[in-house]
Image 1 (cartoon, rainbow, N blue to C red):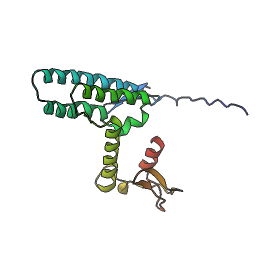
Image 2 (tube, rainbow, N blue to C red):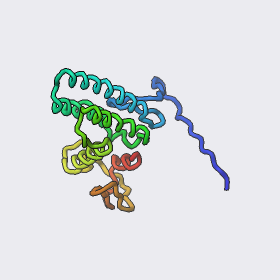
Image 3 (tube, one colour):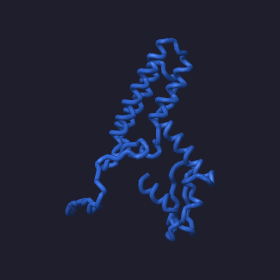
Image 4 (tube, rainbow, N blue to C red):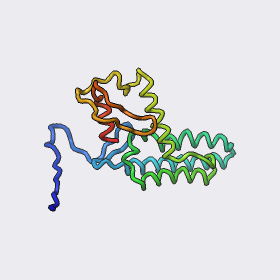
Length: 183
């Protein structure tokens, strides 16, 4: 048995379009290797500054309940911003670094002792997004308004609990194919 080496070549460059190694899309940094390590580092740095500010506010007499609300509103929202988009590209190390910010907040008394993990928060956000897309006919990603490919699915696809995409004689929506390929 021989080992075949596959080589990847970039497509020819286009005029007036420069090739980049890192791109920031709606505040999320992705590298050309589909890594989000740089994004995670920026989020953690930003959250550390916010945590320091919350500690100062707490030491100046702000109530614990107010600090908890601000922690959830600022730090947690930064941690899970657009996570449905980039979470699948995060390594276990990236995910642990994000979870460490929640643990720091718990140890510092900035959030509740039984705060949800980052994974639970991302899963909730995914469920909310999926439900919104599924039941809101006006949602930009609702598949009832997307044209279909003429190629039907050959088998049912299960994306998770209550997330099954079944055979359809109408074909597979293009957005769904992209989601399945990236997912």
